[in-house]
Length: 538
Image 1 (spheres, rainbow, N blue to C red):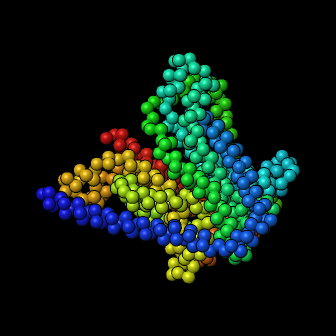
Image 2: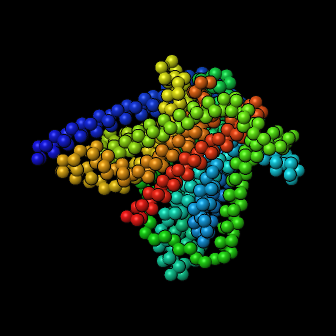
Image 3: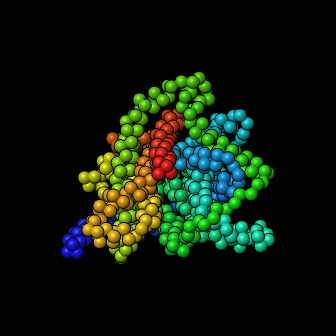
């Protein structure tokens, strides 16, 4: 019996090491080699030429200022929203929390377009209130970036508040410690490290985005837009590589901070939920703030719907399906099908690779697992534009270049880190002795995976599939350098229509992407509810 168990163990371990080796080689080729190729593509003369460019210095300064301002405002507003939802007796808090994340389901460039439609020269708000001034430039980028980053900041802050232990506050109340002292003695130490992570994450998100600046930047050029112009407009890949290396800096800093502080920042499990006291004035203020925020959040989506189904804003406000039909005739249906194919393949491939990588790193300790873990989360530090350019330089001339498979691969790597961490955390919480018990009973590792671990993490797998799908549908960064006329995803039609001043078509494309992502999100929510209800009945 022991001999048979030994054979099973040896066979299982051999297969495990082989799969781990295959995953490591795949990630090394898909992440490290392309990034290394881009960095090696830079020459001393190109670096010197870029550093001497007045536009580069100006765009670097512009990017830093706009990202810093938008980060501060986004976090302050998101903090107020998170407090209103989780620290008051607000009704329908779950509904508001979901509603305010709607902007995450459309491309960032759509937020910039929404600002133009609301606050541009012929914008709806501009015409109603007779406003003057322009939405283009620094203020437009900051405002658009707030729309784009606010939901991300809220979700991160909500996660912090949701799992804060209320026991220290109850003890402080019993001891008569004033609220101000409670903040500096309890709240601030708890929030300090997580809040720094939020600041880094939001700043990096805004700093590396080119969708909003491309739409409302005007003459206020940011670093991602400059890189886009150098590569797409001038086909200068060497200078694009230099600019891309500067885009890596804040992402790498955020990545290193997160890696170095991940374990020390863990606060353990919540032992007692914080009690919400009765306070009508506070609850009324929280309700008003939440409703106002949700209304403002819904404005761009409402504008897209309005613009799509009228003949020509602001000349002819007659309701019509003409713009939708014109958009479909220009190939939106074919490109939407491309996006669906890419998103489905990325969801399946990305979830499989992420889950099995997380299994080997979370449940099989060792140096190779630590290396594999580090490579897996490296994509957190690579902006989409940089990853796209890296793939151009590394895969150009290969059989995969210019194909749909290229876009599937780059999206899988671009969005892999977050789903990987979802699976890593879920698998790490399960009993670590399952495999050892299985060996004792003569049960192989992969049978444990099939019969125990996958069923136990099915909701996490569902969230992983949803994450990959939604982000693949709306991304415009990593795919912008790699798509062709044949394999172009529908999200890139927004930039095409904006350049042609066909904003009605761009609005319709945004609505298409939003509708598709909402269906997927609702399906995941419904399945999760059904599963939880069945689990509760059991």
